[in-house]
Image: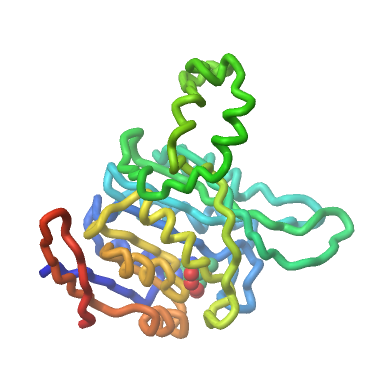
Length: 289
Ligand SMILES: C[S@@+](CC[C@H](N)C(=O)[O-])C[C@H]1O[C@@H](n2cnc3c(N)ncnc32)[C@H](O)[C@@H]1O
């Protein structure tokens, strides 16, 4: 019988993580408090102070992440006095100096963003999910997030160019190439780095929760069952909740008692897995603690 743990802590992640061993987590996924924006609900940090506030915490994340692990940081700079603030860009540069590799940037397209009109910009319908790693060789299970090919192949097949039929080496010298004809008979394709997900704040008792599908997608992509996931700014505990349903161990840290309690309500401390071996595969059934 396997055991899946969910450990929640009340406090500042900077202090709580100091008690953790180095190289403990396979994935860190989090959405920190955004600069100033939600100061009414949980004490935002001023945009100009954001990098200085974040960096000591990033140092702890770097220490507790396994060399094979990944850090996904969901963040978006807001506009201040009519222009986009640059603290996210500055944060990326500082984190690189700290030793992180900035491996990728995913875009979370918020399918249901509020209607509205601003004098000098349109509705903000996307956020960054920055991917950082400690090493160039990190665990990634791309097959776990494949998407149906749809009718792409049929449409494309009609118009196959000569380059599509042979391997087409990147013209920008990236060393990557594609052979489109390889994909024509496939039912599933690898996804893009754009996630189209609706926000889910209604009835979740926290104003900035992840849509459940967001941690789900990254947990599937970067971990396997029994791995350890950390959300150092846990809020309502969405990451831990999803980690649990996917049979991953998780740690969540939340500074405000009301959200810590909410995260407790949303998760179970332990989940037991009963392994049922059949001829072909192992099935898991769960039993609550
Ligand atoms: C954007 S919310 C995270 C929401 C979360 N993704 C969810 O799905 O519920 C950020 C959370 O970080 C918490 N927080 C702020 N500073 C913190 C700190 N230093 N340590 C731990 N939690 C902190 C806030 O109280 C807030 O609940």
